[in-house]
Image 1 (cartoon, protein in one colour):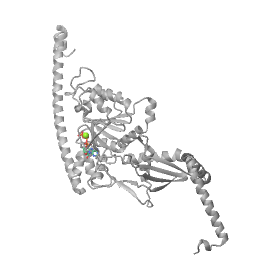
Image 2 (cartoon, rainbow, N blue to C red):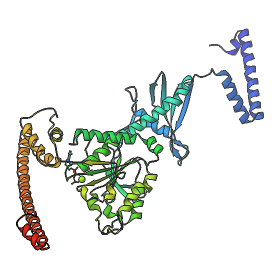
Image 3 (cartoon, rainbow, N blue to C red):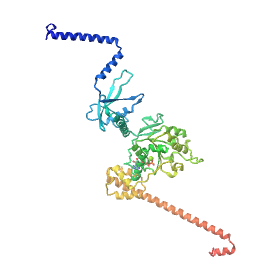
Image 4 (cartoon, rainbow, N blue to C red):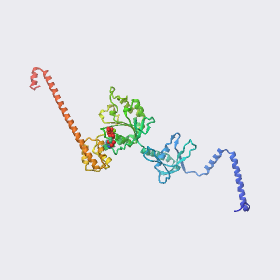
Length: 495
Ligand SMILES: Nc1ncnc2c1ncn2[C@@H]1O[C@H](COP(=O)(O)OP(=O)(O)OP(=O)(O)O)[C@@H](O)[C@H]1O
Ligand SMILES: [Mg+2]
């Protein structure tokens, strides 16, 4: 250590030159601060830093949570998409779950970075939250997407559209299908904001795999649904409303409602269950149907009982006993008004008695697909055995031969077979129960058939006797009208 006095002369000269330079710079700076306006100073500052900073090769896109008043779609998609890109390298995650959600929602925490690779380039996502500026403004959240500038076009033309598509697909997969009803004891009230429908989660587990029905018919239905949802452009081109009508008919317990649930679970479409008897008229129907959403299935169960066919003065039109709803109102709505303001709609009518339906509902073009839900077959039984007892469909059991022969020769519904299979976890016991049930059912139906056969014979015999009587009377009258000579010839059998 040494004092100024002890400094060598060259060093002290250097030090005094530096001191005077620093003093002059401070003077210049304070003069500049006073004379040059603030805006100009900051402009000059940034211009100088631009000139002296080397050109960056990276581009950063800022993706804000909101775009004006609306939510930013890219931000929402990024939130969903990035959840699938979490790796062990991620240090912090946010986890949440609402009472209605089945699974946890996991999202990246602020400050975290996620790397992604797409085609031939890498990108980096960074999630940023800034503190609120004041009490009224909330936290500002945004993503930064960082990548090499030379991939800018690929990011805009391919990567971001891909992120949007993937996010949509993930959301669809995780969507909880809802069952809307007008009077269900629901825990929230939704439906076009009009409060006309209450909803609960559709907890029906039916899928096309668990449905016991003819495999070819099942495949035809799945293919039809697939074709329907991908034909948006086709419907537009031919000027037809993008909707499809299904009529499911068959005895109770053959799986009509289960098929509807399977369709909804397959397409992830919500179900609107409409009770026609609770509607007061066509305008009521119009309001209710307009408050349903796109990508949904409108179900009208038991159409033959829903509306009592009474006043049939006008063809194709009837009045409900307690309402002024008309069949033509319903059908016009389905064909016309609703068609023009709804997309991707499926309408399903069910009935136990197709022959009781009004012909207006059955005429071609009204219901696109008619599906006969029939009694259980041996193939259907195998599916039920697999559902209820976990037996592989190709496996065998010593009672299968007997069961299948009985099922194919008896009118038994899948619901009845399912009930027997549920009686025991032990397959031998369950199958024995089923055999006994099928035998009883067959005996009962044979008895009914015999009775019906006997009645038929009785009726036929009565009919035969009546015809003979009529013929005899006719012959007598004819003979009376003939001349004497002809009469004696007729009596002797020559006429
Ligand atoms: N084809 C089927 N495949 C699988 N399970 C079925 C089938 N049909 C009926 N079931 C079983 O029987 C129960 C009743 O069936 P579902 O309610 O679907 O019959 P439905 O035809 O709608 O009867 P309804 O005419 O009385 O409304 C279902 O919960 C299901 O367990
Ligand atoms: Mg049903």
